[in-house]
Length: 417
Image 1 (cartoon, rainbow, N blue to C red):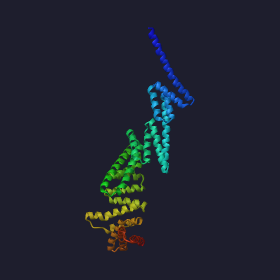
Image 2 (cartoon, rainbow, N blue to C red; image 1 turned 180 degrees about the vertical axis):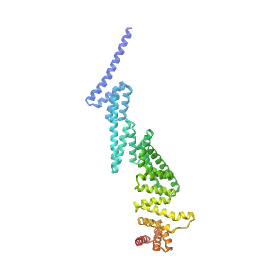
Image 3 (cartoon, helix red, strand yellow; image 1 turned 120 degrees about the vertical axis):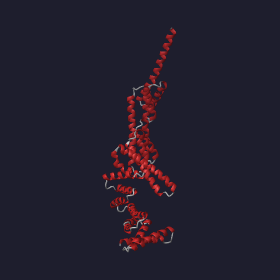
Image 4 (spheres, rainbow, N blue to C red; image 1 turned 90 degrees about the vertical axis):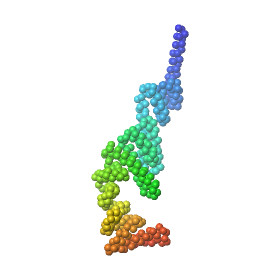
């Protein structure tokens, strides 16, 4: 019995010694903290945790040291360990996490604002990179959707759209109704699609052209999907998204939907020339050439020197006067064809290297000359001469370029009469 008493006393003494050692290390850490000897404080805390891994207070204090060192991975590791063993420090831990997250997020937001407002390419680049750095660090503390979205925006600014898309999709996976993210994705896909359209227009290889057409269609489909969701959840956004949404419908061949949206948009913004032109394009694709021409001419009144618009009207009128009638087996209408001339002449005034327009001017004036229309013969000969000289220039004929410029100058004098 006496042996058991002695053994029990030894166990108690050992426990007291162990607790005293632990208390000593933690107490030492607190004293070092007061004296601002943080390296020694850190050593004492690490030893305290090594001796007693479930010491919640030591984990909390060590987490604060790592916070001050901006090692947020270790900060979170020790804060979580502290909470695993006790909730006594939860209030202080939540406060530290909140303050630290807000500081990082605000730094990232300032960098993003600087990047978006600057015109200096290098400053924009470094500021976008700083945004990503600060927001990625903030995400160590809290998986906040605002930080995730900001990283996506920064990657867009750096023209790393694949990376941007990854972050935007993370947001939408958690919150499919995120207004700004839907807008970002819709806008990004729309720009990608329109840029691909430009590439498509310049492509000559039929196989590559077909591949680009498929990609373009897929991108417009994505554009349509994101903008459709945006206006479904937030109908008030329709006004700002309507042009992109309508164009995506048009590119997908859903002309009725596009037409409705353009008409709706023009109710709010009747003077918007871009919308008027797109409405005309949609009508043209639907086979309503007269309706399209009406819209094109309306737009031209506001922008008479618009080269593309003048050319579009000229081609549309040409189609009506010649191609449509030939396809229907009807007689050509020279009077109707003559309505094309003012627009063709405006095109060559704005771009005197458009040999197709010179050819059209020559053909129509040849028909008018047969009806003895005043001046038609002179215009026919002048336009045809210019058209032929383009061929000589292309063939490298000596003196052809000088003759072409001289012929253009003579044309200008002719149309002044």
